[in-house]
Amino acid sequence: MDWAILVLSGLGVAALSYSALSLFFSDERQVKRQLDQLSAYEEVQAREGEPLLAPFAERVVRPTARSFTDAARLFSPSDYTARTAKRLVLAGSPHGLDTERFLAVKSATAITGAALMVLFGGAASVPVGRSALLAIIFAVAGFYLPDIWLRTRISARQLEIRRTLPDMLDMLTISVEAGMGFDAAVARITGSRSGALSEEFAHMLQEIQSGLARREAMRNLAERTQVPELNTFIMSMVQADVFGVSISKVLRTQSRDMRIKRRQFAEEMAQKAPVKIVFPLVLCILPATLIVIAGPAILGIGRVFGIIGE
Image (tube, rainbow, N blue to C red; front, side):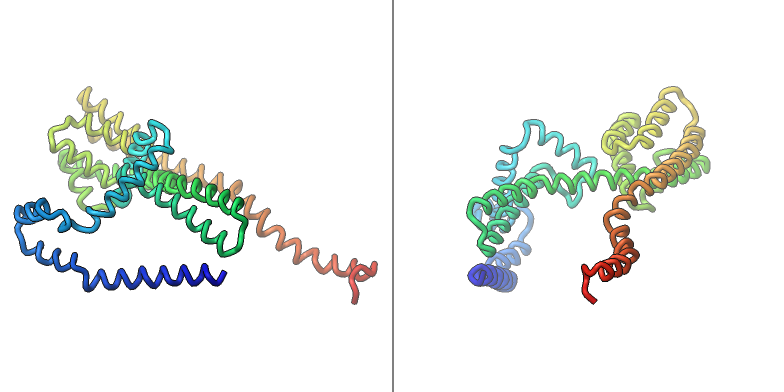
């Protein structure tokens, strides 16, 4: 136990000292300050002539992350990369994650879980076989922990889009009926609001401005979000574009329908609340209530029959 604490303390002090020295006195910071004074062309030429001038992240972190990514691909199904890329798009690419970085994070969490279990086993004098088994279990749990986090981000993002869609459609309806075009109304609203839905509408607008047809940009929007209410709105807008129906009428109808669906969704969540409360009630509140109510009676009966002394 003592040696494990000493080892961990030494590693922590060494890492802290190295970070402080690297932050204030490293040659890399001096080189970076000199590179900042060069032009972009001169900086590229300098790094090609001397690879060590490249930042630490490019020289060490990225190759290490790439090796972690390759290790994660070995333990993943063949189509896992494509499915992960699609899920990252649904989650809005949180923290700028792409498939390669996400797989590197999965490998890092798996290795971290196994290492922590090995350290704990050594500190607690756990047998080697049991410690190895627990390390494998923690490695597998750490490998799939980022997937759970990503699934949670996807659900939260889709819920946010579902809740903000009626308000966004109301503002689009008012803007279009006031005389603005649909694209101009989208640009005005996305510039004044934040959130997942505004980001997706801004992305759709960028695709339209880059030359993509509006219906194709809207289909891409539906593919990136996969929210049923938004898919319904997009299908209505595509049909209005094909058949020449007035956009203002479609927007007003859809905004009214979306408000009704949001109210129905809120009622559905309210009806699910009693079922979700049952488990905390039975596991946490009911035992405490029984102890408070039945405890004195049990003590009294025990004293009467001599089971509990006075």
